[in-house]
Image (tube, rainbow, N blue to C red; front, side, top):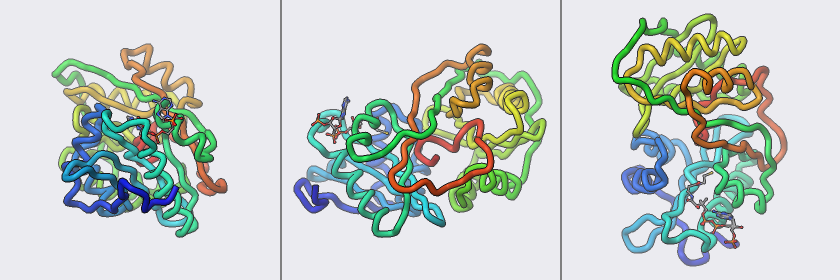
Length: 273
Ligand SMILES: CC(C)(COP(=O)(O)OP(=O)(O)OC[C@H]1O[C@@H](n2cnc3c(N)ncnc32)[C@H](O)[C@@H]1OP(=O)(O)O)[C@@H](O)C(=O)NCCC(=O)NCCS
């Protein structure tokens, strides 16, 4: 379908951050306004409006090299099943095609129903896990780690250069980069819960040690998106009080490109990969 068909698709700007946040909040997502500002300044975000109201969005976030992440595919409940998401994702794919990028995304079950027919193929699976914990800390915070250590491990593991993303995360108030037992993770604020990810480790035991140390030193609810094939990790988390909220299916459109050397234990977030 042509991106110029009515209702018109427009490119959104940083001034649309609050309207974008209203859509992701309606879907009970955890993104905050900082996340929207990052997409709107570093990515290409398409939207459909009715008058002043933003009805639908989709974002393409190019990473240096051959890859881009598609995310923030949101349609307000009253305007679903009219083809808006399909048209917006098409607009993202057209932009990716022009720039020679392979597109990736992490789909909710609803989203997967849209992306399959567009030609996306499934790759790995994720599990969104949540820990609702008491408002008190019960242990020492894990040691701080450097931004360079996180960036290098991210690059090696994912095969992506995400310096801009990780640096934006790290500069936000409330963010911390922490490590224990050779594992390293970033923890940042979200709208309703703190988010742990990305998280890299040599094995599940080290990943669990770090998550446990983070959880003991935090006071509010926590989220992480575990890679399902690191099975011992999500299994041990659910045995210790974490609850599976939803699955995500990673999907790819275009040739396989990013060749990471390892598998992360938790990704940066379904919207970032
Ligand atoms: C998922 C979502 C973006 C779909 O938006 P939409 O504008 O309704 O999607 P489309 O109208 O383009 O749907 C295209 C096709 O996808 C399939 N589809 C879309 N939503 C579906 C659902 N909930 N269940 C089953 N199939 C669905 C259908 O085949 C549909 O075609 P049809 O209506 O002719 O049968 C919207 O439901 C939404 O915002 N959900 C909450 C947020 C979310 O999960 N976003 C996806 C993140 S990966």
